[in-house]
Length: 238
Ligand code: ADP
Ligand code: ADP
Image (tube, rainbow, N blue to C red; front, side, top):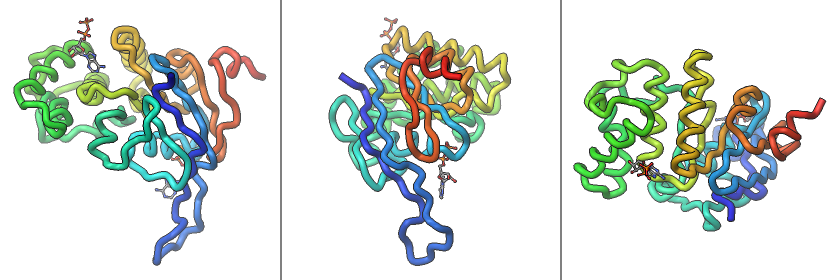
């Protein structure tokens, strides 16, 4: 079965609202993609093609106007807290996505605590996850500014994994990093996939990055999937 099935997803920005000024933008126009269990599906396409909108719908940050999102065959819950247990996001900017005033380990434990995991268990899980993503478990007590950009992205990954999600959505997870650091984070994602059997929807504008980590890719253009299939066949096109 599929970890994630998106069927006919539609999202229109600015379609309603009393004070609407801009014309409506059809950001998603009947998008369907299937992420197999344990696989990494790339969503590629130029800026403005709808990739982030798709990502934000799949993690439940944005309500689509039409279509279906199924996780392990069941509809994605509308309640954010319930959706968060199933789908977690790794953001592009590891600087912006962490709270500068809270200890790194606390931020990794935050989701599980909110979901009812006892504090001590969540803290222990945070330390294990630090180790899993290649950080010193003792660094849980440090603040975000005490880590490098690549290390901060590892914290972001640990924070997402802490919820033991069925699906990970990585939205341009290496685009804000130096090229040398990009390779290390991509290597980590490959390693985690092998060890945990992660199912990942990997959003990127960078075809070189997609070719390194994805089995299959869906190419988006103007809110629609215009091509999809195994990386080798899609990227072989002239
Ligand atoms: P991508 O991630 O591929 O760059 P987006 O999903 O961000 O694409 O954008 C798809 C389209 O939706 C673009 O035309 C963009 O300008 C528009 N858009 C994105 N976010 C908003 C928003 N909050 N309000 C209005 N239009 C938006
Ligand atoms: P190993 O047998 O290789 O040590 P484990 O399955 O014990 O692997 O996992 C190692 C760490 O990853 C543990 O801290 C565990 O809690 C955590 N872990 C395992 N599966 C997941 C998952 N799907 N999401 C998040 N964390 C996980």
